[in-house]
Image (cartoon, rainbow, N blue to C red):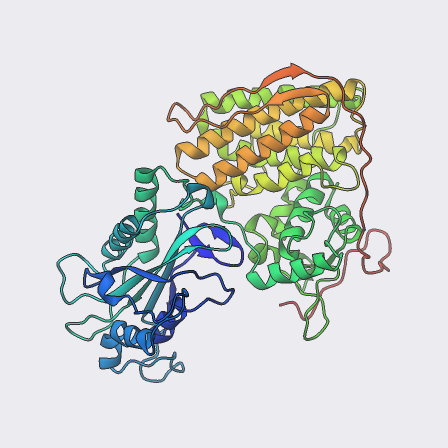
Amino acid sequence: MADEDPAFGVAVIGKVIKGWDGERLVRYLFSEGKYNEHANPTVVAAWQGDPDALQPLRDGPGDFDFAPDEIGKLARHVNAAAAAAGLPSAQPEPGSPGYTKHGYVWHLPVAIEAADGELDAKTWRRIAEDMLAETGIAVPGDAGACRWIAVHHGKSIGGNDHVHIAAILVRQDTGKRFYPSNDFKAVRRVARKWEKALKLRFTADPDAFAQIATATRGEQEKAARRASEGDEGMLRAEAGAAARVQLRQVILEQAAIADGPEDLVDRLQANGVLVELVRDDSGQIRGWSVAAVGDVSAKTGEPIWFAPSRHLGADTSWPRITARWQTPPPASTGPARSPHEVLTGAAETVRSATTTVRERPEQMRAVARELQEVVVSWAAVADGAARRGPLSRAAWALDPATRTARGLPPVPAAGAATKLRAVAREIAEVRLLSGRGQQRDASSQLAVAVAELLLEIAAWHQTYERATAARSAETAAAHVSAHGNESGSRVLVGAAASTGSGGRAPTPVIRRAPSPVPKQIESGRRPEARPDTRTAGELPPKRKDRR
């Protein structure tokens, strides 16, 4: 159960929308919508218990053929308490009478995923009533509570059955504004209850792992326009994704395979990322900004800069991203291992990590994060220049399942996670994998091991009802399985079990299959980077206009 976005489908509940013009909101809910996404607007629940009595009358066969002033009459009826109290229909200026940060008009779109079908009007009514009661906006038996309605729109463009709940946060008996406490959490609790009762897909999960910076609608629309014109953005990132998303993907990849801060900057610039370092008075680097080549402001034509720690995720701040190089890796005491030996050793380490987290689940957070380093490094050397093969897709999908900005040091101190970090570095040093001969078999072994650990991570997330993170890990396992299949082994990945038995996932099964015919991979277009005039070892200068 989720917020519904008519342009981009379903998203996990993000926020309750609070505004100032109740009548305008009601008129919008009975219009065709900004994107023509509304269909047959119907009042399915209301504060007075009789939604049918509030349904505007129609004078024609169309969904929006309402009789004159029917919508206006309903809008005034719903907003009556606010009008009687003399509340403004627009936010007052700061410092003026009546100013508050948030308005008194409470709007919550609620949707179910397309795969869950449709709910009847009675069920939507009970869901809406539960949400209003849990938030305190309209508790059963409180005759003086706030006025509200729930309007059903059928299915959105993305196929999601949904309703919009609109409430006027002004009590009818006193005319005073009502301020719900922790309404966002209350809505989540009700959503989770109904998801369990109706056996819907879990989407309203209070999941810190899934809290990554997401692109705005404007950024998504810009990326879609650029993609339609043949510009899919940076080569080594998800094709057609917003610049914010691509920047994060490229930074995580290049940090996993770089040898140090200078090498990281060089690699980023070679892959279409503009980098500006911010220094203090002593010359020490205290932060950085990044921008994607070609992602410019429509007004100024200048690059759009992002502060990674704020806009891309806390784990991409300069101190955290460079912490991996603060301590030099242990010196190798033996001869360099061949690529297939590196992959075989990596598979063994991953299997050992799986055993560890089954016995000691408290290490799961750190292991999940370091497994992403392994997958990212592996993708960088195995997917080729196109950087859009199964392993790359696995790394992108896994990201929400490894969000561990809170409570973990940037570099693991000990345990299975430390060994996985070492494996990631060793894979990165291979630089290129052919996928043939002994490498093919070793790659298949690693695919099986990684897929099994990913399913273990997914099951662990499901144990704590973190549905978004669990789906991310399952999707990543499927992509790793696809790579294993291409390598010549059949890797069957089952869905993770949502049990409480230690979060144990089923073990993938292997069947030998004939080697596939090698496929040509088109390299695509590499965006032009800004010419680099620095001398060897020199880092970029400080930007004065960093936002």
